[in-house]
Image (cartoon, rainbow, N blue to C red; front, side, top):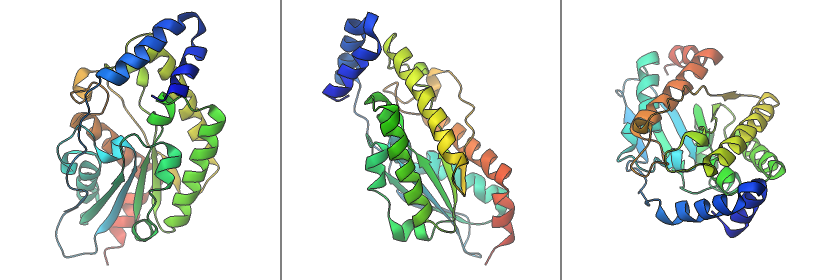
Length: 252
């Protein structure tokens, strides 16, 4: 958490400011630094058809911090589910950086990779929340990111994964988790508004389960089990948008 973020966090929780300030500093110092997953590119399925091109773009969820390999994270698990639904091979590409905000993820957009994508999954917002960006900053920077992804991936279905409820993260003590949890809810509402105003973007479903098994060893980043829940939510959203049928019908 940045110094300005800590100060704003204290301001947001005036009556508990000393506690929240101390907790923010302590969590920052004590949370273990876990590596990102291996296997930024991968493939599921045979070679008898053109592979569905899946891109996962974002912050630590995309990078799969705390998971050993991407086959067990969002990209690999989602590729497996799409392959099962469509009988098409799926190739995944991960473009992710731990700690990145919406503005920083904007700088990661690769026109060549997204230009070939059939499905783009975007995950961002946790760092904007914990760094205590204002609602106006979040709205402006997320809008810029979504517009850039639309521009860069003209043929892709785009899925946005909502922020997980930070109030449930084991690494965050109360009242810090309460403050961040409320902010995440506000940011999700803003994301929903922005998505309804744009073409080809679908808000993913998330059936979050409050359990320690949902988290990596640091109590902050998702475990492979939670990555699976995120993948299930994307599949549900793709079904709702009719994307699986389109993919299964275009095998060449």
